[in-house]
Length: 152
Image (cartoon, rainbow, N blue to C red; front, side, top):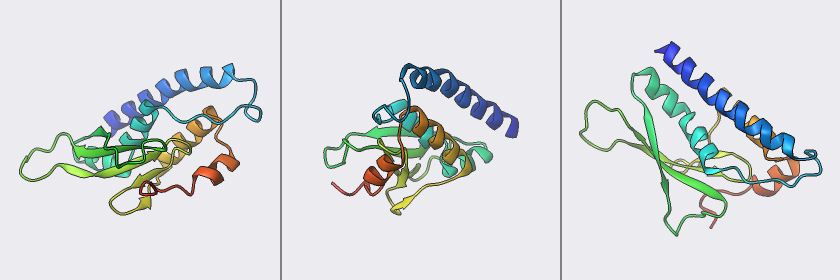
């Protein structure tokens, strides 16, 4: 179980190391480049690394997610996902874990149900890599870090 998790995490990091550095190298320098929003697939990676997903994988299950496109959501600044248990043995009741929003400008993740920002060592590391690749600096974090998924 732990070996499978480690292999999965290494695969994700390997994919990121192939994609992100090429993009970062193609830009002249971080200070002269404009910040770019993160891509949908990067938001999906962040969602997959949620602590709730890690907990379920430790129990032999897994999470899935579905992008929400309701016009009442702030889709300009956030990717919002319904996150669910994709391998729950007992199908009675809801498999929904919750709704989570990824800030496109900062890579921050919000638990929409509890209105808290999500954090873990894995998330923090991937967010740091994404921010560097997308030229998201301290001023961008200040400008967009105050946004909340419900601020629409």
